[in-house]
Length: 32
Image (cartoon, rainbow, N blue to C red):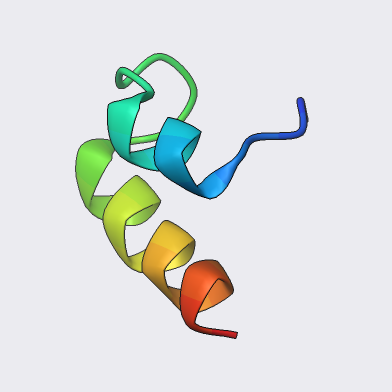
């Protein structure tokens, strides 16, 4: 897994994970 910044998670295209998974997974990590 490449290190992604918070703003990168929102801009990253759906190439590794689905947009839905990326959404809740990123939000959970960002919140914590």
